[in-house]
Length: 288
Image (cartoon, rainbow, N blue to C red; front, side):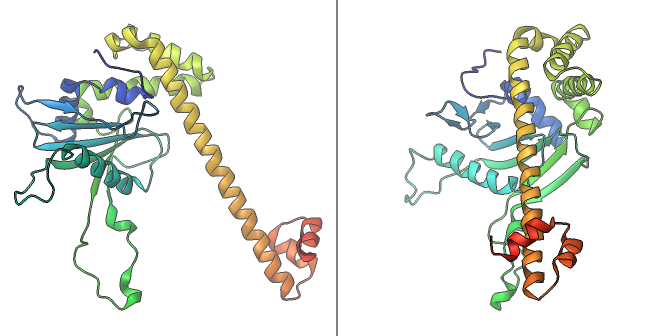
């Protein structure tokens, strides 16, 4: 493939860092056909200082279309906002040698945005995220709601887990095989194999069953290391989320306890409604 892996990568973006495969993927996602000779230029944003990617995949098609694709195992509700920031950076790079104050209009390739989800949590085959969903309601200012926002960004979210969006998978063999590989690794881990062994066994299995065979034969070590890093990072984020939820619940119970105590409630009653230990309630009562 001739793909550089000097910067932080993930298996998905590493696999799809090839113009021909990206063209196949885009055509599958949009159910369209493109001429064989149309050029595809990868312009994924990178942090030069830290040698790591800022976004997963960004590419131009024939200079007329710019496509941003993010691969996620957890749906992020801020994805539309993140993609807005990414596309602004992409356009900034495209126009850095142009005079933005010129009388001549600067043409830009039309943007399209995708999030490809392959996490374990249930998710529909397809959904849409809109930037406008995050906008504050201005009605409280006495303003009328406009029919359409002055700024919008629409993201198409597709579930690419094995067996989902079958037509898209049928149109893109590489995507289907990637999903099958990830599913096999998860299956082996669920059956009791260690994470590293599960990924290693999945690589062996897929190579012997002609699933990403050439890619895995050439990049088995990199795939193992990248997927271990990805999944361990996902676990770390999940733990951080759970700890945050737990802290939030504790803070909520403590606030309820303080309010009840201030209203003259007994320690026993506060324990009953919050579940806090008596010593903890006494500390709150004492102002600790």
